[in-house]
Image (cartoon, rainbow, N blue to C red; front, top):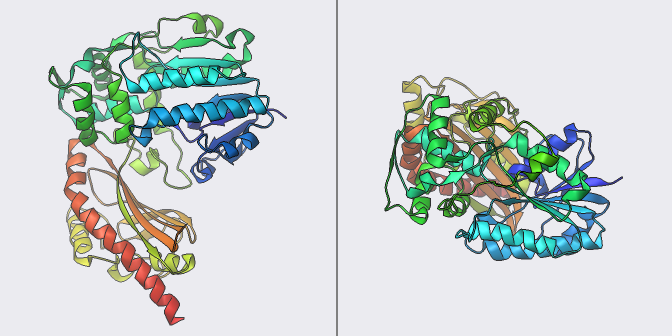
Length: 477
């Protein structure tokens, strides 16, 4: 049986395209560089596999018995060298698709202005060119800003409006775009490869509205009851504003920087051939934004922590989709089980491993404002299960000897998750602790940055105490 391969299923579009195709009753094979990332998504009817376009030896197996392959990967998060990585990945994929007899590659690129200045947009264009240089016919769909929960450009807009009552913005707020609803784009992606005439073609995909980013921010603000003051200034170039965004948004820095670099030019879909071939009602920005907000509210409780999970944001869509993160790790010679037993004693008799006075102070502050700290006892001193309360935390996921995930229930201007993990490492096992925080507005950002130095101090100590306790318990037995 031939499958549709979603290559890059853990990414933003891939994580929505897989269930969209499954809902149509289509056989789907979904891949990610790390299969654990997609294993908890609930895609029971999909075949899951691990593959990396930068590791050519992993490609042939996942492309076997595939008619249509969606190429949805990019390396923006890798930093300034991402264009070279993207080019290498595309060549590897095109070669493997030829060897396995794939009938069509569908590539999601980005709208490209005349003479693009952005490294990001040029790289997306080059990736399409490299895929087309192979023998497998390619259908490239170029989209601009995608309106849907988790879309990096959409989340930048949301964070700016939600976090800043006053915005001093660069000139790019007057650049124009044709934002497209996620649902419209998924429809195009699903149907385009079914048409013979789309082979070897490049199509623009955009919504019906041509808007500046200032208009987009103002319309989103109206939908959410915000009233930001937007003050454009000429001194803030796209590059300078990308550094500023690191402070005020939770979108990963490298991705935000690559996106912002492309905002100095208009990116408008001028091609209407796709809507002629695949008729559908294109949503205007307000309709698309309303749909995105509702989709955010409907996200299910995850099997473990997932970026943007509404359940991990206290079911508050106004909280930042992407999380600020802080953590540390240590390598231990103890077994995974010994480390796990040490981790599972967190909170027993008020013991949080390290800097107990800081934990006590934070718990006192939570208790004063009516939070659950000091008001709840552990069910068992050594064992944990999903649903257990640990002081002001709630266990939401457990993978014995691997991972413990707890949702923060303290009073705070945002939502948090604390996660402990154990993994094999050179020289033993690596135990790590990571805090994820979804800030709520400017107070949430200030709260996060105020605690950041303490997090660095505490987490370094916690991982080393866990490692030592696990090693001591092994020696005692």
